[in-house]
Length: 143
Ligand code: HEM
Image 1 (cartoon, protein in one colour):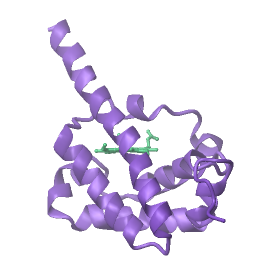
Image 2 (cartoon, protein in one colour; image 1 turned 135 degrees about the vertical axis):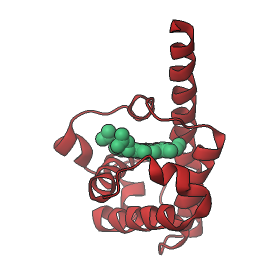
Image 3 (tube, protein in one colour; image 1 turned 180 degrees about the horizontal axis):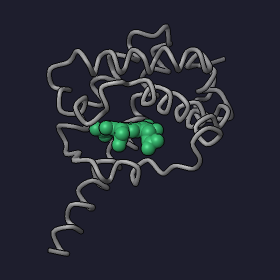
């Protein structure tokens, strides 16, 4: 029977556990470094991506129902608020998701899990955009 993604650690296991998630995140940041339309979002990151890779991989472990590796190392996090200082509009959100699509497609995942994962990632990606716009509108009002 197909696992029900989102239940227990089914998604974490489908993603290949911690090692699989690290491979996904490496492919994601490799694509961000390569892809012309991702230049803007790559430039928001430090030159050295080691910490960014570690943070995203740890976050995804817990987010996919596995162990809470991000919190263990870095404490609590709210994804929209953690990005509110960045300028993320539709183009930046789409570039982020495009890198994820390439990374997901490079993994040995089933078609069903690929589709599920990309649909789920689009939700926080859109929240990041909304938080970024709201933070800028708040700044405008204070002027
Ligand atoms: C929508 C487009 C997105 C862009 C452009 C973006 C960009 C960034 C950047 C530039 C950083 C480093 C921030 C810094 O060093 O100040 C970062 C951190 C991070 N991002 Fe994103 N991100 C996006 C969406 C997401 C999504 C959807 C997730 C989760 C599913 C995510 C998870 C993380 C995590 C866990 C960190 C580390 C945060 C911290 O420890 O402060 N990001 N992101």
